[in-house]
Image (cartoon, rainbow, N blue to C red):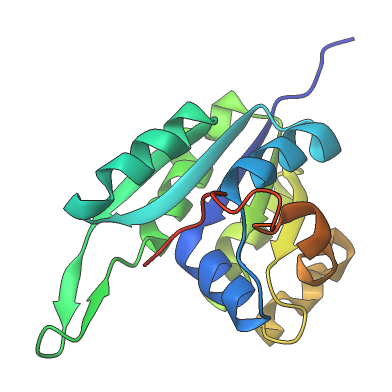
Length: 173
């Protein structure tokens, strides 16, 4: 019997901001191990806006098992905020570029912009899980897929940067 290939596709901006909104910081190394052990994930794609000053962070994330897909960033306003919206890249990778390489997918985002992708994956019988970073703040469009949900709200003890490991890596965007 063939072992299923499971890939995770992560909207880093939605994940990072949602986790911080509930009061903790995600340790990405621990998260990668969690995905591997809990869901037997083979590859994890992290979609993120590129900032030159974060090169060491990107190198670290690669070293702990993430495949990073970058989006160029733009300044919004008068140098106020840097933005790198990666939604299209995530959809393209999950639905086209990597589609034939995996059997099941985990999508990590509470963003309703991914409704069409999630619906597509469910119809193709490739949707495995939908990681909702904040149980209290996610798009109502995703409710249709509630049977696939797992929430991060109760994972802070397993996945947060801790006092024991104060150098745990988390994204600063």
